[in-house]
Length: 106
Image (cartoon, rainbow, N blue to C red):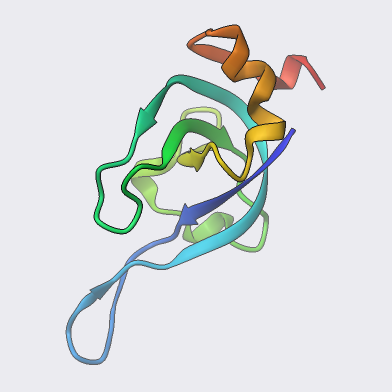
């Protein structure tokens, strides 16, 4: 199963001395899904629903992934917006389960 999301990479300091977060956006291979559905309260994403998922980092960015996101099995936990990924997540959301290991389903 693939979902669209934003994978946080290591932060860097720009030339003005501000800390900047970098992201790799795209479709990622899911390892595990975690519920329940949360509602965002951040300023620019208010009202959007999301869940957490462990995803495989692509090879070209695997060395630059934010270290706090890396799990024991090497996957990275990121929030996934439900709206754009609704078709892929429909079975998980309808089941009401709190955790799915998607590797077993493939």
